[in-house]
Length: 290
Image 1 (cartoon, rainbow, N blue to C red):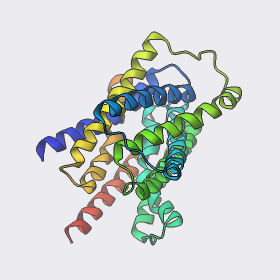
Image 2 (cartoon, rainbow, N blue to C red; image 1 turned 90 degrees about the horizontal axis):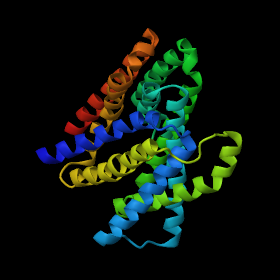
Image 3 (cartoon, rainbow, N blue to C red; image 1 turned 135 degrees about the vertical axis):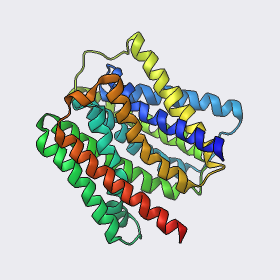
């Protein structure tokens, strides 16, 4: 159990590191995600073929997974777009509201009943984002894109729940990322038309960060989390995932000194979001005991 928890925390730390790498890579957000998907899909295909764990699934299921993968790709594009237009801390603050936004969106997309307490906690989190949005005008574009990223993340999670029982996790991830890559490849000419860039190919340094992002923070982190999930509950994993934005923000403070550029409204907004997440964690723990 102890080793499983260590593996899980390493995976969550690596996921928190993706924001730092996103800022280091000089490509625009669309190309960054396209190259990340390309490297990850090829790597996973080779790895899973070698391990003999590639699962064959029905064509109708493949199409569903491709659709979910398109949402993942849009989530990543918005996440890295938020970093480019604001910074790592702002992007992660917006992403940390995903769990709270799900309290508002899941009842609209599924048969789950709306829980008043979860809605109130969600509103506290949104109030925190509004505070940052209202007082830090320079980050408004980044915040809007970051909220879009969080919404795509919630929609992805809700749709993914329905697929877990049908497809093995590794195969599910591979097909989803393949779908994301194909959809993004189709959209890329249009994307580059509206968001032109002078750099299409990664620099040598960008290749290094992209390989680190794909191999270590995606493939390796996913493998660690799957290993951990064999010995711990999904509940423990989901609870631990709340630390991802915290790790990412601390890394951004340490590496990029982002705390120097953030006003007091950021910390008030962050405190409100942290309060909402903490109350939700305590609430879930209490319900789990009963």
